[in-house]
Length: 483
Ligand code: BGP
Image (cartoon, rainbow, N blue to C red):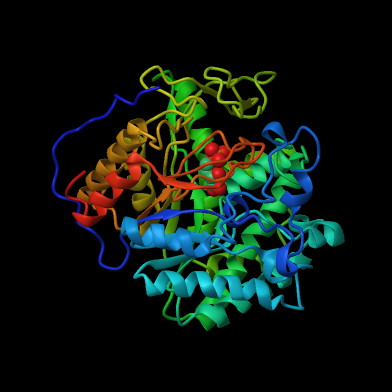
């Protein structure tokens, strides 16, 4: 695998935003480990990953990369790299083992050490409230996102964090990739609770949107000087050809896979065409009086963009292709076409190279993503994730990941171009700082600037900076001018 298809047109030096700049990201379940230490309760992922056949080679986050116990070492590596922002998530069941009071003080103390450790090193914390690790207790009690009781519990958890960190944390992410997580959870059966039911999907998703809105509404009261927004897994759609049927498929994909969430977050409404179609299918979510007013009240300060690839769509008549899971093995070329009959199906883009997990490598797609979001929603954007998952090899204490450097460099140039186009970019957080557990791909799909010596069975957990670590340090030190 090598990334070559990149436009290296010269452009102005990267104008770094004033407050946020070049950072890196992680998520609690994927790095912390310590899954039952110091009073933490189980999350739905702790339970799900124990069910045979759910994750790659049965991998789980019991130990992950042991960030919980190696916090100081990881913070020192961040400082050494010169990171100016670090995005992390708080584990809800570490704070509230059963999902609601009583609070686990040891859990909160860990995030105190993390935030204070970042600030002491001059690194801006970007705190994600929810990155998929729902307390198992709430899943069992009322079915998690399928019940409106979660709205009070989630708001209470958020307000606890607002009160505690308002003076130290400016940037907050509400829900991470509600679209990707719930699609996997309720349509593909690939994330907990592993359901495949379209009505349940649209209802759970509506409740999650309400939770997002409640979190933002409460934020205004408790963190008036902060900024908050959701992180969205944005895969801009392309039509496979200029055949009108492909254009319609592309339009359907934008409506159902992107605007369905983004219009709700930013405009407080569902896209009319998609809603009409779902009503005709009997699949539209149950919308109660007051719901739409709440959604409209909660316009975010920015949209967090998790960008990895674009998707290309073609016509999919009734009786055609249904939804299929993506590649979780790293065996290139094994991703099946996936779609919704009558709306769209995916197709390989003949113009783009792919990673070993069949993800299209498309820096122009990032520029396009940022421009589309800016034109449609007119909000500042923050790239909360972008990176390349690949097999890495440790040879003589070195990892020469020049393919990752090429990927990140091309995407940073796309950011420069988008900013020149008029996009307001608050910051860029690469995924990820250290290697970490990929939810369904185990430890072999690596993203980090820092190699962690472990595989699905375990390992020494030693940290070894990769070539990309030294490259990114230079990029940051030169304020983005030396790419
Ligand atoms: C996003 C998630 C991250 C991370 C990333 C890479 O969807 O927010 O948590 O996992 O994707 O995906 P993967 O690990 O499947 O390669």
